[in-house]
Structure formats: structure tokens, C-alpha cells
Length: 175
Image (cartoon, rainbow, N blue to C red):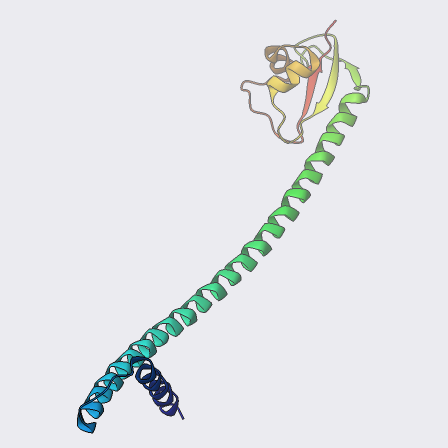
């Protein structure tokens, strides 16, 4: 069946060419030779078409594999993107909670205490007790409370700008 179809096509084309050309031949041998050459030429064309078709089918199979791989990559990227979106949303909520906490602490009246002993507190006067949060710096505290960094360091006996999360610092009250 596989070889019958090309042969049938060749026969039909040859018959069509014969009908169109209305070629007359001197003898039957000349006609047979002519048609054999024509059939041979048509067979070559069919073989070339079959080769082209096989090449195209191989290309289609390759393209289907590539599309499948790309689809898998897109799905993986979509999953990663969704995970990143969730992480960003969770991080944003954490930051909001931290900011609300900090805002609440800054809005609440700070506890004020008087220096009890001059040896313990090198500065005299009133102080606000501040608990160090993540990201807090002496610079930020000085701006928030309107005092100098050196005043904060002196009130707490600090020799460097290093402070720790959870550390309680005395902030001099500006008069």
C-alpha cells in the first residue's frame, strides 16, 4: 500500500501529461522510452518529496520536544514566582507589624526616671529608658529623642557606637 500510492500518483501524472501534450511517436518503443523517462523523473521527484517530508516530520518532533521542555520551564517559573510573591507578602506583613510596634512604642509616653546615684549615672537629671529593637542605631535614637549621640553614650557608659537588640539604654531628657 505504501508503494502503491506513489505509483498511482505517478501514473495519473503521466496520463495527464500525455493527454496535455498530445505527443505523437513514430513507434511504440519511442513512446515507451519517453514514458519510462517521464516515470523515472517523477519517481525521483516523489523520492525527494518523501525525503523532505521525513526531514520536516523529524523537525516537527524536535519542535514538539522543545515546546514540551519550555512548557515545563514556564510551569516551574510560575511556581517559583508564586512562592516569591507569598514570601514578599509575608515579609511585608512582618515589616508592617514591626513598624506598628515601633510606632506604638514611640507614641506611648516613655518611662522617665531620675538618676539615683551619681556614680551609677554620670549625668544627672531625667532619663527615658529605651529597649533596642532590630535596626536601631545611636544615630536614629539621637534624632528621635533630640539629643546627641555623645549624650546617649555618656549616659550609658558606652565607649563605642555598638548596641545590641534587647539592650536597655537611658536616653537623657532634653530640657
